[in-house]
Length: 266
Ligand SMILES: [Zn+2]
Image (cartoon, rainbow, N blue to C red; front, side, top):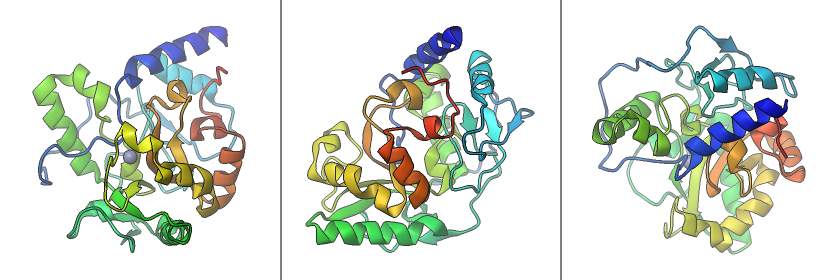
């Protein structure tokens, strides 16, 4: 396993530098009518990742070594793993997206104000509990359609080239925002939203302590960059359900570690 650990760590470092999991539109929102063909994905490699604690680390390592991305077989699972090596099917659209009943830092209707039904009520309860503790939260960005992510990535690809674009923008299908189970949150005024400065706010501290009670985890925690492939993002919450969220938080694990989808190196 030593060899695998080194390979994984090196690969993760290479792709995580300067990378944000939440890169959003650099311009006003618009749609893209293009197709969502992938060139990098090994579409034939299907894999189920919803079996908690399934011993499949070697498959993960294999995917990394081949520079390929597995397509998840369980996109609707609350525990679906989506990262640089596991992507959603290109045609996946969550069937149960609902409008969130929480404040956002921008007005008007948007897909960014939607999440899957399972996460919507818990998120509202989380916001209410924060309010009771004197913490006023707002949504920044929740669901992002595959079509949006394709258009976003293509924009960066054309501007900066494919390899550079991949260092800061999630490849289509690999953004957790496409699951409908992730949301970026900020303080009610939107100050420092989705930036490293947010990591030092009272809102971030509150989320780190209480998100688990509502079934959410801080998906990209501090000190786990080599495993998640992303820098610390106190604002990016992922719904996994209360039971999993409490276990993951109590053990200071990432979703990858909880699902045993990486060779744990530390
Ligand atoms: Zn995010």
